[in-house]
Each structure stands twice: as C-alpha cells, then as structure tokens.
Image (cartoon, rainbow, N blue to C red; front, side, top):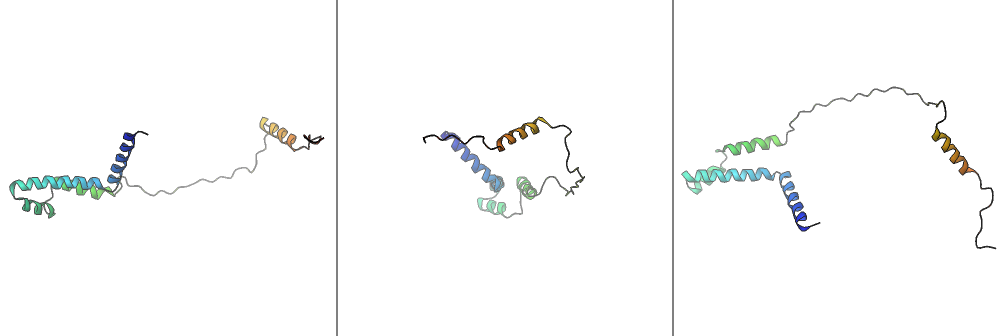
Length: 129
C-alpha cells in the first residue's frame, strides 16, 4: 500500500472518530463563538465581548441551530412501534415416500453397496517374498 493511501486512511479514521464523539458540534460552536466575538468586539471592547459571548443569555442564530441539532441528535427520526410477530403453524406429513426411485437414490445405493463388501482376495504384499 502506498504511503499517501495509508495517510489518507488515517485522516479518514480521525475524522470519523471526531464526528462520532460529537466533535462536529464543538467545531460549529467554536465558529459561532468566534463570529459572535468579532461582532460584539466591534461595538464594545474585547473584555465585554468575551463576557457577552459566554454568558449564555445572548445566543446567535447559529448557536440556536446548534443547540437544536444537539437535542435532536439522540432522538430517532422515525418512530417505530413494536409489532408482534405471528407465525402460522401447520402440521406437515411425517414422511413422503417417492413413487419411483430417483437416479440419486439408485446411484447412492449402488455406490454404498459396492463399498461395504469385503475384498475377494487379500491385498497384495510388496517387499516380502
């Protein structure tokens, strides 16, 4: 395997683990906080902007969407109802006898009958005189 393919696979694994742990929400929230901080720092100072961003009383539209997405992430999209499986049991005949023997039965019987017979002569002995 080439080096770049291995490196690409490693990056894909890191991205998959990051999003499985909810890292995408952290990334989006960081972008939202950064945008809010820039917006509030234009009118107020840096210290005031940091306090306003992290107090939790002034969420932006992106923060509201992130909170909504986090709350809906654990819930299934489709409601499933438990259904009861019902099986219909019928009695089957115990044994069905074929009318005429099939080719497999005839060949199998001939094969096994030939194998079960004793050899007619003793096996040859090599090396002994």
